Amino acid sequence: MQVVILDNADAVANYGANIFVRRLQRQPASVFGLATGSTPVALYQKLIQTYERGEVSFRDVTTFNLDEYLGLSGDHPQSYRHFMNQQLFEHIDINPGNTYVPPGNASNPISACEEYEQLIEKHGGIDIQLLGIGRNGHIGFNEPSSGLRSRTRVKTLTPATIDDNARFFEDDEYQPHLSITMGIGTILDSRQVVLLATGSHKADAIRDTVEGPLSAACPASALQMHTNAVVIVDEAAAARLQHADFYKHIERENQQLLAQLGIN
Ligand code: F6R
Image 1 (cartoon, rainbow, N blue to C red):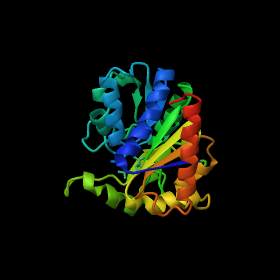
Image 2: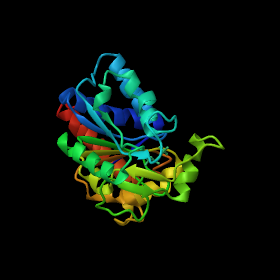
Image 3: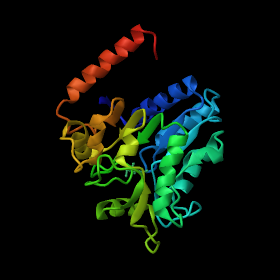
Image 4: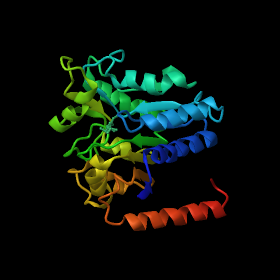
């Protein structure tokens, strides 16, 4: 696992966005796995700016979002479909028909999960999966105790996650307690995983992800098994890493090597 520690949230968004931009320039018909929540918003803004400068096009891109609330249709203001339209899709030249979010209003959620898996497979799998992380180490809505080889399925949210996300809902608004989420196995099948975390409230989860045991107690620790996973964090989220200096040393060496090879 590559661990990149940067000064602040802006640098984290920049570093993450560059990974997507470089991939897009090499491979215009990329398949991207996307996330919602507050963390990726700055990265999406960087992608929009890059598009506006004419440096990339999303015309041939396909996207699959990690998760969606069960019980909310795509036009609900708190749905993740609505979030993605507002934060990214409406600002770039992506074909809306190529943007997939699990259907929160599926009449049969169980078969909808299977169909989502089949759709990912039909598109040749995910090239880069973007992830945020919950304070409890969840990725997507794979809460602690999720099977480390799980596939897309219906999941119950923990009370902690419901509390964390309550900020997005009005006091008297219905807040779902169930979701459809890609599984940890689905995420691990992506060819590259990019996890972003900023802020001191993520420091324990990042320590457990990077240096903790591989354990369903911290679902993100499953990324230790991935062959191409990068964890990009600011100093606050890195604060509890025991080997932070070593990760910074490796990153400096990597950057030097890339410069020597003329790769930006
Ligand atoms: C959302 C998702 C979640 C979030 C996580 C962190 O699609 O998959 O796992 O990434 O809850 O959320 P923020 O970024 O709001 O702290």
